[in-house]
Length: 477
Ligand SMILES: [Zn+2]
Image (cartoon, rainbow, N blue to C red; front, side, top):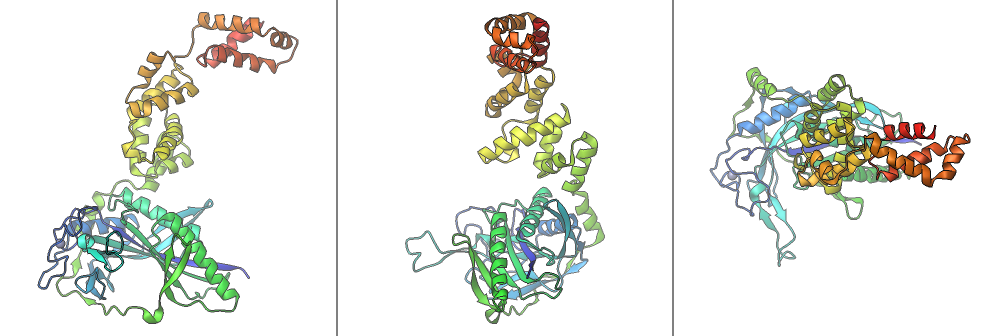
């Protein structure tokens, strides 16, 4: 029997505010443990939360970018549970009435485009962080860093619209790209700015009723989402096929073992006893505020990609690659302003992205800036250097800050476009390749390519290929 998977994702994104959601403490990652805390985020008795306005604006911005309906009124609630990294004994989160409802995101997997609907976006505070390793007495003690306690998050919940691990990974990746694009999160997965939990079940293909789902926690990279879900789908199919029943439970992805492990069953699930947070008024958002946030929205990736196709006449594929991030799209537009846009696109998608990847760099720290790249492309377009010499010049320019013209001048790389200089090379090629010349004159056309190659070699790659070919043809009569 064929089975299909049904997957929904819950993604937590840390908002890029300077201060926490309910107090003025800083949010920078990597500060000394417990250096960014105060009575509010330590949960001391009597301390009162005050909602961070910028965090709400970022939440609204994410909702608008994802096509959600921002709710005129939403409510913060207390989610009660005990854990050492949660000093208040409850997390302030939105529950029954979230910030935004609906919306969605299109994904493309194997050339097939499909919509994935969103259920909701709500706001909440992060918990602190338990440190189980790295101390001399870590075998006996757990340390806690409360710097993360109270950092603002949005949780984005999707409908169970995905049918494969690849679709889930693509959704996570697209969602990250948009959130980073609009500037509401830094999207740094290593620092935990983006975290993903997945709900997954399987059912016989064609059946509409859902199977029992398991929740897989903490799959915090695109690769792990794909691996964890592949494993989990396989595991569930095997259970069903051998006549067993999937248990509703929470499972943890163990990346080193490459499998999911049971963390707690439904019977052990928390009863969070949600109730409205008495220390915060309902969050009221009027149309004027939504309009203000909307006015700060940059052109979104899809729209920018469509514009690139029409404005610069580049293929849709190129436009898709160039709009992976707004910084990359900016880089392209700055280059394309000065040279042929398709040439700019080719160089960026080729040499620039390849070199960046080799160095593990992001586009905003690439030392070779658009004016320098445009300078290189201009020399190629003018015929001063060939495309292949251009690649060598590119490598020399990348880190050095030297311009293409400087390198070409200093190293004498300009193409030989001068007939006199080339004629000498051609005469020499004809002299030392008498056999090939005789074959060509005898009617063996293929030999011509060999002779052109010899001229290029004789000129150390600097001959203008078109001129070399014309002159050679003439010399051979
Ligand atoms: Zn604080």
